[in-house]
Image 1 (cartoon, one colour):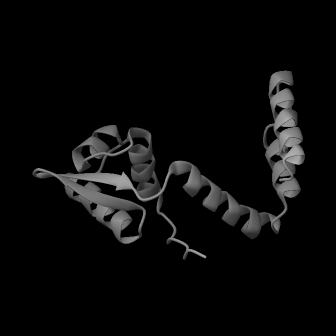
Image 2 (cartoon, rainbow, N blue to C red):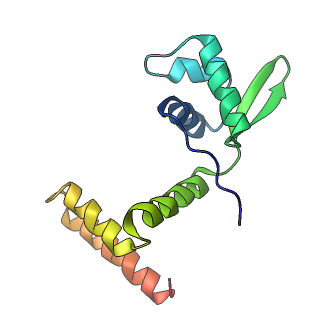
Amino acid sequence: MARAKPKLSRREQEVLDIIYARGHATAAEVRDDMDDPPTDAAVRTTLRILVAKGHLRIEQDGPRYDYRPTVARTTAQRSELQHILKTFFGGSTESALATLLDLQPGQLTPETRRRLKKMIDDAAREGR
């Protein structure tokens, strides 16, 4: 089993989200997309930390460094969700779903309910 990557700070997560949204980015592009951006040096430091933690890799493009995620966003989402399920819900998908439904009572539209039911039915048919 792959070793878990170290957890991210709020700023590290913000930078990683920007790079996932863009697909890849330079330090300047990341800084341009940040809310309340820190100094250029702080952005570059955050990028180096994300590389050291294994979340990003660097490709040199002439004089520029281009940062790219090491795993697809969906892979990272699944990994984090599995961690949350295990840590907070004892591995219970049912408990997690019940909590999600309680967070915003009355927010499920009939169309959303239909789509969720279809996903559950499809998963049952596929043996998941």
